Length: 220
Image (spheres, one colour):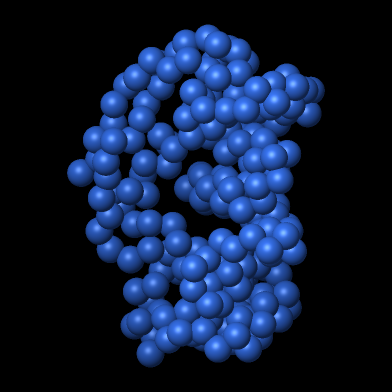
């Protein structure tokens, strides 16, 4: 069961108040996708996971939280152009704008995950080119996070497992294979190893479609 509440929130950038929806609780039944996207019911809460200030356009999980230093970027032509990009759904634009803000704050991990969320929304709307663009952006951001020494997985090889899926879903099969090799060289635990082995099977089949962890178990 998912519980959503409507709350009046004051934008931390422009100060204007607006009604926003907030997830109070949810649940998930089933197997997550290989890129960690949860199954239903939690899966459908993605529409509530980002807020947009109707006044200034600030996008964040909670618009009441922010750094005032972001005002200049939110008001920039580049940000506003991306926010109002008619080629993509508003929800995709919101996640990408939040990604821009986090990239500006050098939080490449959060920026990368925001781009992954944007890709999920594109998947739901069958926007293949948009999904690929979002995943390629996420790959770049997460690689920058690795260069900065920032972890985005608590499990050995988990970072490579996620990157392999992003690369495979983007049809970057050669890079996906190379990243698989790096992950396996780290000698991950059984669960991550199984994911990587399943990913390699999909790579050899040039399969760029979505798969979940249950399929990995069933394929043994």
